[in-house]
Image (cartoon, rainbow over all chains, first blue to last red; front, side, top):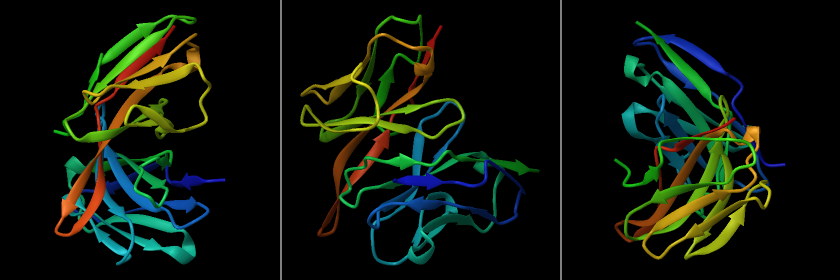
Length: 114
Length: 118
């Protein structure tokens, strides 16, 4: 079955510290991979996506993610977290045809300590 | 600003009623998808419409139906509402983007409609 697992429900980091949010997926073929951010009461904003090529992808707001095929993972990282990064983060996978029929993980809520 | 709007922002219905949620996107957005996001969960794919035809459906019963119109607007209809239908409903529209000689699809989410079923 196709699924996305985000094992961390909550993560708390201090402002200025580094961040890594984990994402593992189960999919028949190599899917397209996405990270979205959702602030309270807001819709989803795309941070970055991986379709093919370089397995380290850069996104907006200083985020990056690395695709590791052998581990079926697509972890999100940021070297220095800002208080404004506090939000819910969702990993998603979709079929490799850019149709965007996405399967989302259950999300990781990021809290930032001042 | 994604250019995707949804109405209403909030809605309260009672069990057994019917509801219509609306989504409007910009010219050139040929595909629209609808997602249900229950509290504390990630969004779940309901269905997708391309050029006014259903183009894929998730694990949702037939009482969830949709329409897409030529003016880039769409509707999600839910009949016989159940308490578990309480959720944030997101629409996402897709347009073709271009970068040099490459083309790709870009998807934009609306802010959602919060539906509460009592």
